[in-house]
Length: 307
Image (spheres, one colour):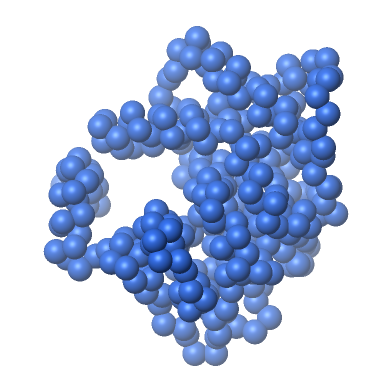
């Protein structure tokens, strides 16, 4: 068994342990999840010639919608410097538990800035896909980074669900992941707190299927939104990242149920974000020819950065 296989086996064995046992082992090794020990996570030291500050952009959604790929393309731009890892999870469950009990000071939020060192003239940011579902986060993120741009990448919610439950995981976790994965497909509702906090010109909603079909145009739109030179085209434009090779199957009946559950949310989403092309979502193409709804849903203001 090579070193990589041994490492994978050790991780699988660790994840199979009950959560309290995992936490105990991590603590014995001096490892804590962000804010778990009551202190903000420690950022790496700032390299010489760089300064830290609030992120210029934050990707907030959604899991299993190509965010790792799209973030890698943003980082490929010569004027962008990324953090040590894509998902900082600075604003996690421990953070919000502490925020609920004690509040959050400006100094604690400034600890977030230290994760974004960059030289003068460059931009930096992160992408944590689960942020979209933290309804308490938008005002706190606005406070921590008042001028940051928000990036959101959405995918056909049924296909996203099937990819979400297909991640390698211990069987005992699968049931909870199924419930969570189902809830995370209601995009329209989850976007509301972000719309109420950030102006339309600071939020870019992208469609995964459009990005895979027209990556150059969609990436140029993303660069323009971030204030970057949109003529740059990275070499790895079509290189897949973290692609789900084998998907768990769901029954035809359950798939039809998912479509029925998500349909009202998809209709509301496409009314507010006309750039979402339902013809690109295989489970909702029928909505393109459906009779117009009698419910008038106000549209979100369009963006000048559309492809």
